[in-house]
Image (cartoon, rainbow, N blue to C red; front, side):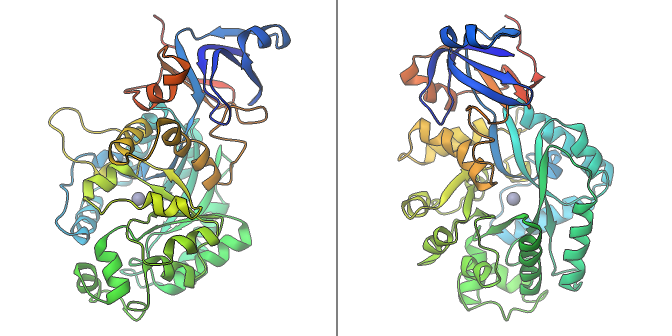
Length: 415
Ligand SMILES: [Zn+2]
């Protein structure tokens, strides 16, 4: 099929006015001016009209399981209070509640233009069915903790490996997510890293998210140290930063997504860069917790790939109108509001090609180019070519149309 739009934004090439994208099966075969493609690529034509056509967005960190917790947890005074609150809220939920929440979240991501997501999974019941029920490309990272349950690390990681290898094939893939340095013990981190190496799986971990976590690992003090000192051995604390802790246990590699990385020690950014890891920033979650300024400039100046995620809706404030929904457009706007050093094209890159790179999907996701997956979204608008990236970043609400793997997911809205 041939899609025509007022402006096509390939991300990896300059925008094309009165552009077109030719799709064959599940791939893009050509991108260029309508005048050139209309004769070379015969097939059914969909003229999308006054829209901007761009690649589907890549959401590099999400927890679909917690969509139903939107606005339910007030911002905490100290980070450990939020952990306690979400654990308490989860305890009241049934598997059916989590199932509904996951599916609602997937629908919200599709409506708001995400076509690929790195999702943290914590509920095994029905996971295969959920993955099969959505056209979204879901990279399911199995979440593991090992503090309260006190189970041997090998038992936890073997169970995760079995669960993931038994999942039927679906769009996307699988990986491991040791939850965070504070909620795991070193043996679990090392075991997860080893399985990742053997199976060529990507790994992702929340790291250096809060000041409390940073103080626990660096200085053996603070709210998290005091709380967890009653729950876990603390001999891994006081010997370096949270990022150094993960590096020591083999996690940091080109197949690693470090989520948050708000509190860095000297050399942490260089360490992440030298080992080729990516950092996922979640602007709205960052703002909810009131963390220190995200060190984007420091990370990128040394060569770290920074991309964007939505995190979960459990870290969104209660609103008096509608509860928040998952949307990378909302994250892009939140990001630009707090980082004056970024232009709109740069923001869009972090929500597309940078996320694809983090997941090893360069050339496949996050761009419109020959050979890439035919994952496209359209938003209404007819700005000038010079203002097109700004119009994209300022887009609000559902997308006008979307295609994943060459199939319509949301049909163009008439009118
Ligand atoms: Zn998270």
